Image 1 (cartoon, rainbow, N blue to C red):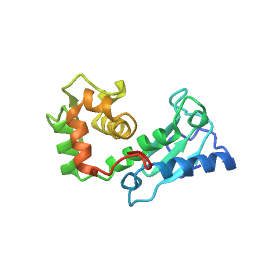
Image 2: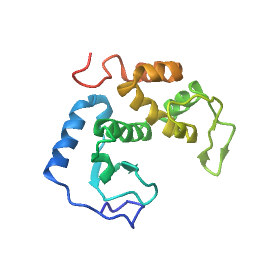
Image 3: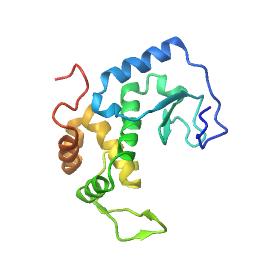
Image 4: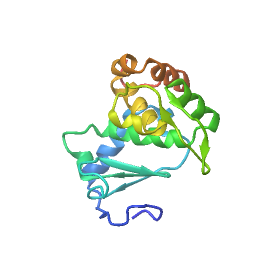
Length: 177
């Protein structure tokens, strides 16, 4: 169990050799720029304490994969891309966070209690939970630029352009043209 993990009731699970291999293969598909230059620990748990069917959760340099991450309904590389995008967002400068948010329809009217409050001003998101925060919106958009780029370009062209600019033209699944 990760020491800093907030969900203490979750049950840790032993990795199978097949799961380890699948994770390594999935990470090998992702662009190197998404893997970052900061440590990330990946753990295996049985199921999420906060959401049924959720394939993964992340927090402060920790990614937890649940049973459902390995079933046929999820693309493991896509699941990992989303979680790694959260980590990438966490390491953006305050200026980059602010410019990403403002360019993509987030309004920051004031700073309340030491944390930024962002209010969405647009209605089109590639996933409904993108409306929850710029952090979730960013992770969804990074996931979509890699796995469903035309959907992202159609729904949120500003996010498509911003992420392309941030990561560069070589930001794509390895082996894809």
